[in-house]
Image (spheres, rainbow, N blue to C red):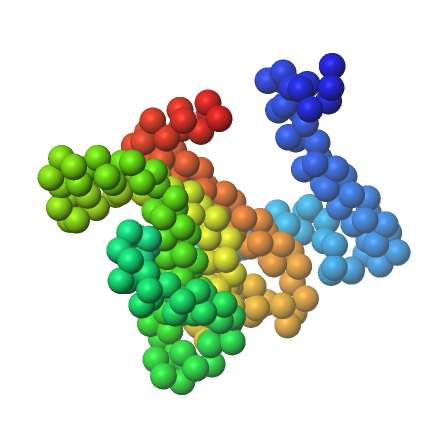
Length: 273
């Protein structure tokens, strides 16, 4: 049997999924052990006991100065900014994506503009945003929107443009107006694809958020990472990076669950292809 046709069992698939994580963990343990044997005060690859102490200090013990538990304060600040920015980006991406993908006049007027805007490096605009919008929440949210919304618009426009023309013709034959076609034909088929696009933008959104928090913020996961880097506090930085990764993974899983439950036909069609 050709390798392309061989599929692992459920147990084998789970085992293979764990292997890369186990290898990374083993490599870290070996590297940490070697460095700590040479220099017990080494900070580059701390021992797991150092991680445990740092997690207790950041996630379980109130800060002596503020009385806050820093990890949860930082998490709440970052998720608030990220959630607001993604909500705005989704609204913009959905509306303009459908309009550009479906209506020829808007496609001619906005298609090239959005394509060019999506090529602008968002991080290059960060100083401009801080100058024009200040150092508050608005500039941080705007950076994420600028980085995410154009990509959502382009992807939605392409997906709407790829819809079978026969569906649009049949809807018009039955007397549907443009608004009715958007609401009853285009929108139901676009929403699950919008969720796919949003899942792909979670990583870049976190990147823009951390960059903004690192430069001008008083709270947030990115702020804390760049605050402690001056002390070479890898025992704090690595758990924070792991926590950000877990949050991003959970966001992806939640979106997948929403897509599967709200649009079961989409999951079924994908499984059949």
